[in-house]
Amino acid sequence: MSNIQSAPTQVLQYPVMEHFYTLQGEGYWTGTPAYFIRLGGCDVGCHWCDVKESWPEAGHPMLSPEDLVAFIRETPARRVVITGGEPFMHDLTVLTRVLKEAGYLLHCETSGTCLLSGNWDWICFSPKKFKAPLPIWYEIADELKVIVYQNHDLEWGLGHAQRCRPETKLFYQPEWNSAHRLPAITEFVKSHPNWRISLQTHKYLQIP
Image (tube, rainbow, N blue to C red; front, top):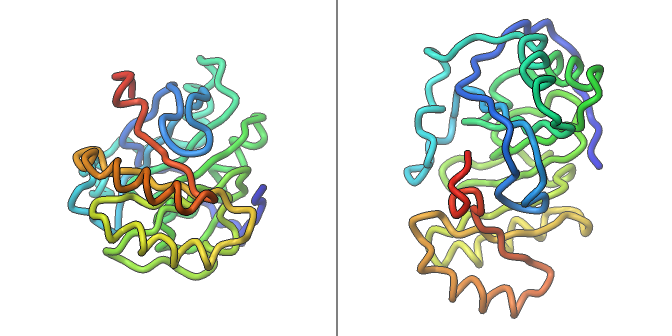
């Protein structure tokens, strides 16, 4: 469990592209209910990204942490996932404090390009080739998720895993339009049994 905070600053509203209650579709917590909050703004810009609408920081509704708690309370959610875009382009100290005070377990999904802020129960770190992550994320990641767009991404992922803690959970995930990479990923994981395969099961289930 990761529980690290930076110095608080008063951020009262956040650009929220979308928020919804669903099942986690990827990685370690696949299949578990969670409320997702997708923040606008991204400094990476993966060309295969399936939520390019999240890249601009402007143009999204500005919601306060209290607004978001009110929405979440309309559901039975106990876990909240903060994602993007790149959520750590924003100082998440106030948001996580309010959500914690409301009793929620907090997960985040990040490419690791920005400084950490906030208080987290689970950190999913997914480095990208388009912008190098900051070293701190290797030390605190609970989960490393490497997106496989080309076969050489498998070897690339090994280098990132070597920098993580021994207890970090390791996943290869085929980019949605690169499902034809699955046989290569399968064979690679069989040869590297400390890794697992993550699939975007929410897309198969046709849920958000």
